Image 1 (tube, rainbow, N blue to C red):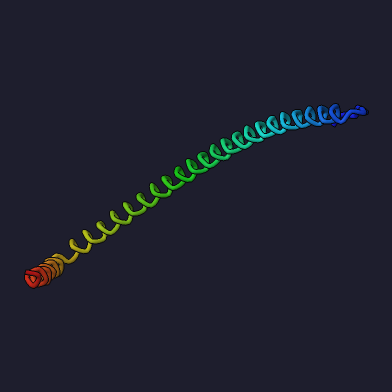
Image 2: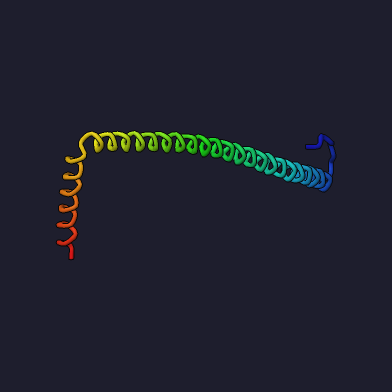
Length: 112
């Protein structure tokens, strides 16, 4: 606020109006700066979230690939064991397959 000493109320009113105008301009400028700061911070936060999301997606893809590889290894191992069992006991394996076919046939014929 201005520090002028005047005797006229009109002069004091003019000084107050000028001070209010300066205050208004300062508030508009501060508001604009605040808006820009918020906008910049929001953009930085968004970029950070995007970076973290991409990183998590990459980690999940890696984990999926590892699980897929482990499942494939387990499947190959199981098939190898089954093949060795069938080769070591062919008669038993054929009888078991025949029995499984009969059971499956019974279940399927009851559905209709």
